[in-house]
Image 1 (cartoon, rainbow, N blue to C red):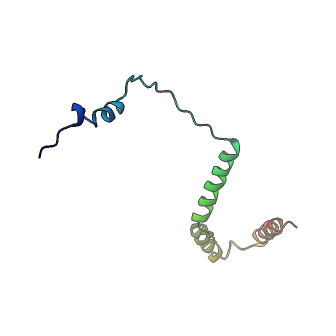
Image 2 (cartoon, rainbow, N blue to C red):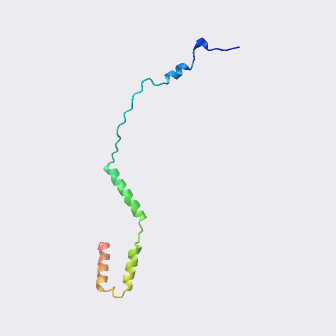
Length: 95
């Protein structure tokens, strides 16, 4: 037994032709723009400063070693140095 197409029509021919694009219009490329608000810029700066602060050590060992060397010298500690240090300490405490 032999089966032939019905009426000589190809059933897939209509489906395939409907999937083709009839009119291909060229796509125009525009320019993209990005705008960043002032609030976003401030938040980015705050984030950056937070990252820098967290990665910076609390103690500057190079300055501590310099001060330790100065303190070892007996002529360094005098009334003027003590008064200046006390003034700076009181000023940092807000007094």
